[in-house]
Length: 424
Ligand SMILES: Cc1cc2nc3c(=O)[nH]c(=O)nc-3n(C[C@H](O)[C@H](O)[C@H](O)COP(=O)(O)OP(=O)(O)OC[C@H]3O[C@@H](n4cnc5c(N)ncnc54)[C@H](O)[C@@H]3O)c2cc1C
Image (tube, rainbow, N blue to C red; front, side):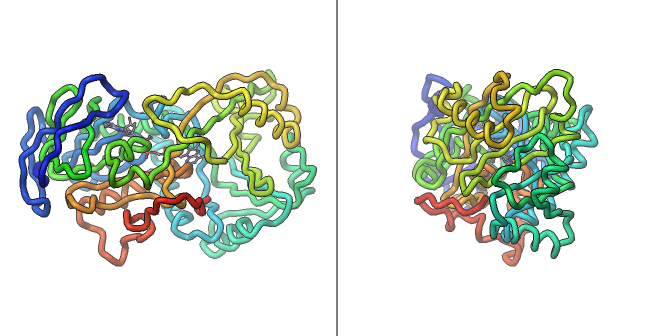
């Protein structure tokens, strides 16, 4: 592979101690780099086996490419954003058709993967949004779903009480319910997909890629173990590590934040808390959103606050949830799910959102190296979109996306340096 002038520096902090230079030959940045393999070669090298990278690798493989997928720690590892046990799959995005359609398209992929897995990965038992009043977001979600023919229900307080008796409906006047949506078993889903990818002829390897600098041009990416990897095209789907890999380009455009999730153990022998009886839910709570899941695979009822936490370094940030966070969750539960408020904590998770300025994803070519694609900025809502993001990215890599189908909101040019979250 070739790329312009090479700066020799950099390793991913926290991945290993030693700094390794990037290898490469200088060449015109405009000419597509082609590199020679030190082991095996591939048409496309996908770096990062989270949900975005895995689906991108899968879609590229389906398109006939030879694909090498690598990850520093493994698909769905505990510090990746895709490594939590569950993620909500929903189509409700207010009037935002881009993400409603993306989620709708992705449903097909999740249904396929879930059906092909030993144990279901997608549990479409419903997602409930509730609020003190009919929010514009909810009204728009209803409208968009009806226009697109997606199943949705509007529930008043009486209906809420009848359908979800564990919910304390005090202060709730409006709710919408997506009956076809529900939790995805995220970590298992990514691991299952990578297994399918390998079974179908893709190659997966555990390897950490050394940092690229903005002014660097890598003809060959080098792993921290000193190996060179080669491909015609490279996709960086590195989640919260993207700003570390591309500090000048993305350091001020992707903001990883620390997010805590708490699991409260469900009462023994009580089926009312399982996925078949209890939906995924989000309480708008006057703009201070909390969300949660039923008791999935006996791990407990997951509850979290959807507020951006403090900045986190994905390598060095610790993963111990705070006492304040737990207190806050218990206070919320007292109001909304009183029977859970004092249940013992079964586990906690600390993960990171990798936020763009407004919540839009980044799926674009590197501005300088046309054979390098950047895929990321899931911004706390990306998991459900994995299949469609992978398809879009694969078409971009394959040069099959006509200008008319390029989504400007995924472009690097729209990624600002300030934070004003608007995609929810
Ligand atoms: C607490 C929490 C709750 C969420 N809830 C939801 C939800 O309900 N619904 C939803 O749709 N989304 C949700 N999200 C968002 C969603 O999980 C993320 O948007 C999505 O998982 C991002 O996937 P990714 O593939 O971009 O990143 P990741 O999963 O982080 O994957 C990136 C991978 O790149 C690898 N990597 C990085 N650098 C290198 C390197 N140099 N060499 C090799 N490998 C490298 C990493 O090891 C990692 O495995 C939530 C996120 C969090 C944290």
